[in-house]
Every structure is written in C-alpha cells, then in structure tokens.
Amino acid sequence: MSDYSLSTSQKWIVYLSLAATALGWGWSWVGIRAAIYAYTPGQLAFGRYLIASMVLLPVWAWKGARWPAKRHWLTIVIMGITGFSIYNFFLNQGEQTLPAGTTALIGAILPILIALGAWVFFHEKLKLIGWIGIFLAFCGVTLTASGGHESFHFSKGASLVILAMISASIYGLLMKRMLRHYSPIEITTWSIWIGAIALVPLSGGFLETFAVVPAGPLLNMVFLGIIPGALSYLLYAYAATKIPMAQVVSCMFFMPIMAIVLGWLFLGEFPSLTALAGGSITLFGAYLLNTKGKEPTPPDPQTQSAGVLPIE
Image 1 (cartoon, rainbow, N blue to C red):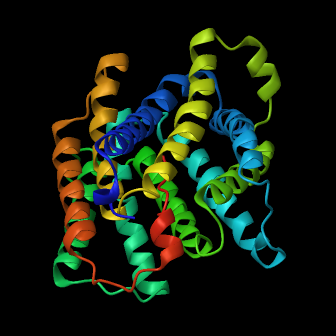
Image 2: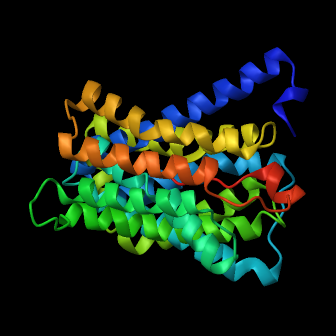
C-alpha cells in the first residue's frame, strides 16, 4: 500500500510510529549497556524476552492466536534461537566492554549481511553500486571494530557483536521466507517465545539476581522487554503495512545516531573518532545498497505488505 493513499493524519501516525521505533531500538543499545553490570549476559537476555513474550501474548491472542504449521516449526525454532537467544547473548557480552554507540555502529552491518544472504540463498540480484556499498560497509565496520589499533585487530567485544549480527542475519533471512505464510506479529511472537525458552540454560541464578538487583538495572530490563522488545516491533509492523518498505527501512539508519546521542546523555559515553568515521562509512555503504544497489524484483504481495523486521 502506498503512502499516497493515506490521509495527512494517517501519514503523521505512520511516521511518528517509525520515529518511535528508531528511538526505541536506538535506546536498546544504551539500556543493555546500563544494565549489563548487574546481570550476566544470559540473565539479562532471558529477563528481557520473558517480559517481551508476556507483552506480546495478548496481542497474539487478539490477532487470532494462530499456531504455525507443523512443516514450519523447525524454521521458527531456528529463528527464535538465532534471532533472540544467540544474538542477544553475544550482544550482551560485547556490550560489557564496548560503548553503546560503538556497538550500534558495528550493528549497522546487519542489512549488509542480510543482503548478501539474499544474494546467496534467494538469488536476488545486486547492481554494481550495491557491491560498492557492501565493500564500503565492510571497510567501515573493520575500522570501527578495530578500535583504532594500527594492526586492525578486532577487540573481543567487537568480535562478539559481529557474531551477534551474523546470527541476526540468519533470522532476517528466514523471516523473509516465513512472511509468505504468516504476519510479522505472529512470527515475532513465536520467535521471542522460543528465544526466551532457549535462554533458560544461560540464565543461571536469574531469580537470585532478580531478588537483589538495584532498581535502576531492574527497570532497564523491564523497559528493554516492553519498549524495544515488544512495542517497537508492533509499531514497525504497523508502519510496514501502510507504506513501501524502502521508506520503512530508511528509518533504521537513524538507530546508531539515536544510540550515540542517548549514550552520551545518559551514560556519558561517546564513540571514538575512529569508531565514528568507520560507522559513517558503514552507514553510507548500507544506504547505497538499500536505496540504489538492488535489482528490482517482482513484488510479493504477502511479503511486501508485511516487511522484514530488523533486530535490535
């Protein structure tokens, strides 16, 4: 559905939804950084998505409480483990040593990884400028992840964040396939439930920590579950049914900027000049790829109206 068929008030609602989504997902990097000192990476990931799963439960029930077909269960399980369990466990580990803004700048490589996966597995064609964007993005993330070292070796935290993005790209690619059969809300809800269950073995001592954790980290975990874990997905899904995906995805380029600003305001952290330079290159490469670098493909009414949800 094109935005030109919307009234002015409807357009404002859609664009405010996207702005709130970018703010929520941008803040998630800061929220993790602010809370991770009080939890283990597994505890924070489990608590966050336990809360998100409870928030999404009534929405799923309201939308019809449908379950996936048996032939799709394995795919949904893989999506939950890669998109929420492995991704968040590695991301939380990485943010133990990396500023929120730097982590978000490294995370800008995610659409590049998904585009490469679509080229390999779905045979989607890329233009020359798309390959230039991919090259620039990888140069940028290498610069950001190196932390300014002359040898350009990746820090442990940066390596963990990159592994998290690789895992998230698997989720994104599988979601693209599943959107032919289910709505974004259904897929997201099922995946988060499975992801939360798979995090149980990594959440040892959660109840003991939960009972003594200070109010600040506790509220951060709750907000991470409610806002970026559930609400931002709902707002994104709403916008993706109203306007073309090219416009929806464009809001995601603001997430690292949001993370940098919020990290500076609330944590007093600011990425190094090297990280900022590398992140800018990565974002520019991702912009080239997503706006000019893909060959047009025949529209799929089911996937076009639903969109592909990113990871936060």
